[in-house]
Length: 636
Image (cartoon, rainbow, N blue to C red; front, side, top):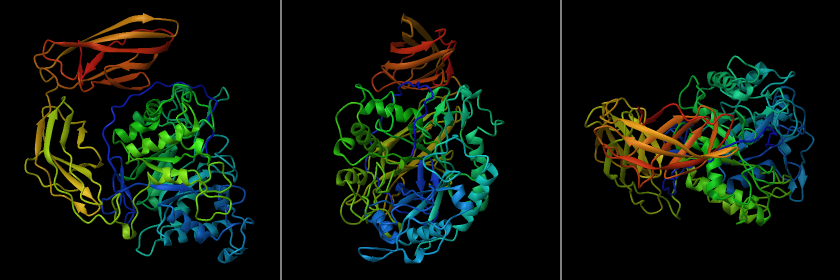
């Protein structure tokens, strides 16, 4: 559970051009899981969506998951499974690991007879062994979550991953012990039960004037948060811990949460991943990293983005800014590790702007639109304000409305690890091959692909894989696959070499298998200038105390036209765009990227486009940017 920091807020809206999405078949998965682009995939390469739930208690002074005073733990695990969840995020404390007590909040009988008899006399760590073993037996996967150091409630008060009693060395050693302890825990099919570790719950800054607590590299409010600041720099610590875990078990997913504030821009504790754009995590084992954010509604704290103007679009802009861009840009998978709401209908669905119900319904819709995003709901616990179950911990959710909302974003689970479609019955037909694949070079480093969408067979849902080679007539394989789990029939390939020819093929995938390859398409990236040259006119047309309005004209002074453009600049001061027209934009710190929309992408040689404009806030000096680039070409 997270609490919002009192650190000052500041953000800008980020408008992403949303792609059409469709439902996707996700399976429980075989073997260990790993990553591919923004997807989590199983050992066979099939897409996995973590659709789980938090079951807390081991991290508290009780040192045991809650609800065992009311139900047998096998009954609770079966309730999780029967309600459609495929994973448990299991919080614990270092104190519980190192000095486990014999928990007192366990009952051994209820109205139905004896319960939890095999837990008598066990200490907390031994009880956790039993819970994890039984979870695997019913087909659930487990994410271990280091929630705090000393036993207690919520995140660590100091915002860090270490305390005087439990230094970083203890944090890492406890992790290595646990992953070794649970490496052999498997289900009846031999699939591992513990598949991921959430290194630390909700790192955050302490707004005490000295900015103690956790920070992310590049955070200007903490002096740049250099990696040499080993007591505060969380991504550097996460790399140390993640690599230590992988040295003990190289197959595990490493989950790294965000912080709360980055250069004065604040989100929930653990929810701010803006720093990833410039300072990503680098692990020694590839395809193991998952980023995680926590998100809550106004009932927990009245964030500034909850107001009378709040809409799905404005909330999406907040989410895309803090963590959604990682998923959208295929940097890595993202897990929404905590989000929750109460059981009153108004807190689940509401048309009132800025309300709890509007937030929850919007987040569910956002997860529906972005099926590659993973999630674990907070919480299962019947005594929690956001409980899924009631105080009796039986299998019936406390709110059928909330459960139906969550069911709409769950994985389609099947026994034995194969995925299934969204309808009744089993997906048993391999999809047809995609057709009409076309490739277009947009710049010296970018090629855009599109193709005709495949009609899913009955009871199936379809995703796409993209393959690339520098040789014509190549055969698609895992070694040349560059994207998977795509839900829309288009893909943007960036970071390419200039004046180089690339060849592409696409396959369609459903739970029954993958299609044959599409037709081959190719494109040659432009040379470093590609015959294109540009000039940008930037005009401050209106200014007031803390804001201004600017107009921009993009001139094509080269010898070739362009059909799509990306304009970039860096503000010299503290300027934040609040609204932009005739384009979509992303602002990360002072860096701004603007892309054309569908109707204004073409600028012929000798032509110009002057419809761009925006409003922004500023503090200090409002100077114009010193330089601009279009499609990677510096403008004169």
